[in-house]
Length: 201
Image (cartoon, helix red, strand yellow):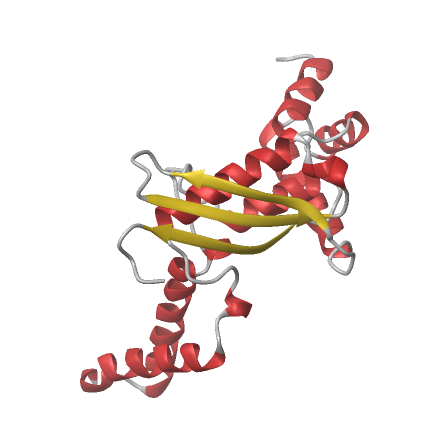
């Protein structure tokens, strides 16, 4: 069994949380490292929600050029202070987001950014696909909503599974929330552009 000091150090290394927060999390989790990480994430997300109204006017524009120089990405991520924009956690987030955009080609940042007309068009397409299956309307509605969730998961950056997590459990939103919790500042993906040679603008 690792000593409490070792556990605190490991928890700090894995989450970037402060010593007192790590001690509190380990107490709440009765010494379980995984449960302590989950506790810190929940606590961080609660604090992140409180920060949602604050201005994020600092930040960075990051760039990624894929080997071969046929594909490139620019992404702007904002935070509250220039200090946080220079931290390793923030810079790592920029890199990960740019690579995610290059690999997964999202059309929007968040589901809230998808125009209502596009959502409605997708619903109509899914209903048309199910038209000849003679299912009850409530079942059709459930299937359509399930397909719509899949659409958001493919087309919205924050909803996409993170490409570096083979398990598929981590969403891009989790990365942003993690940096939000680690830095104690509001972190916002503002905009991005993906360029591929030969593609129409």
